[in-house]
Length: 395
Ligand code: ADP
Image (cartoon, rainbow, N blue to C red; front, side, top):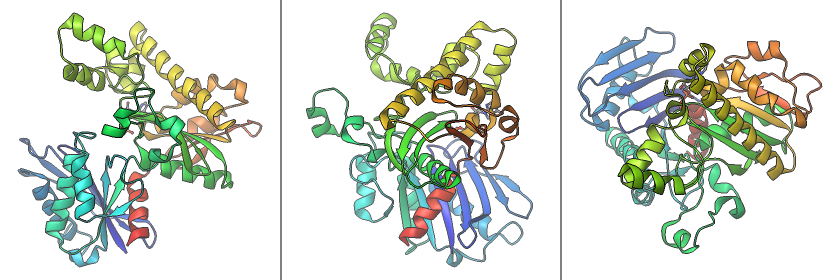
């Protein structure tokens, strides 16, 4: 069984074709700048030469067709025809309160995705276009939606509800949903496998450009740091994470900007970028900090302090923790950041083996010492494989 995984952003489309017999990637790639000048497809077939083509892609429909052409190409392709694809799994951002599990797509599901455009204005429209493009290009093939909110949706009411008038939940479904759900589900599941314990208490730190943290018991999420939108929680590359909402009113009044512009600033110009004034890329911020840039030092200090505070609060929420796992761009690559975060966790009996930490890369690795009271892991996230597994289970 071969499953095509599609992840549409507002101007991009990432894909992977996965052979579910052995969960190997047959090909993967990316369409960039869809709807903008300079559209480009980069196609990476396993065991064959990569190729890229710059060609106009006016919308995601054109992009899907180019992806299928690349997958079936005589030279760079990996399948004969679309008959070789059993199903398509789509990453979909938001389904409000309606769906919390992966779902076979029909007209009702598409309506829910459309009804949630407000909750995911950048992603949901692109996700729907990607789905409809696949339906048009491969009529009759099952399409499955795997929602990014699925894992976080399962948190108990006490963790989900904001302390605002209840009518806003009733009228508009305003609650905490959590994001990066597919990654948290996958990585917490892999952590349970490493521990060999089905009912373990696990904290996953997904530290990428976007960053979030989850607490789960036996693979069931009990709390997660993102909220109604991905803005809540940790300090991120460009997002502020938690802050006093009164800050918004103060800045809007003093800078004479409206709430939309304010949110744009909180999403795109804040986080370590806004604090350091250097970059949203942690490698650049680290380099500046190493050269003595005080704002870069402050941004990184604040970043790891916030992560450590969340780990403490999630340990309290679960009344303990068996394992803490780092994943995503920063979590998988930044050995120093992992070590510095864990320095806050001595009270939990966390001890890091510096050598193992330095060597952890690319595969699931334990980085804690033998006598550490809490296991610490680095586990590469694999959202595409998680989506393919969910899709396989449904079809
Ligand atoms: P997203 O999927 O949220 O865009 P990723 O999980 O790919 O992000 O993470 C991207 C981030 O990972 C980059 O912003 C970069 O700062 C960080 N990163 C990648 N490699 C390293 C590294 N070796 N050291 C520190 N940070 C890194």
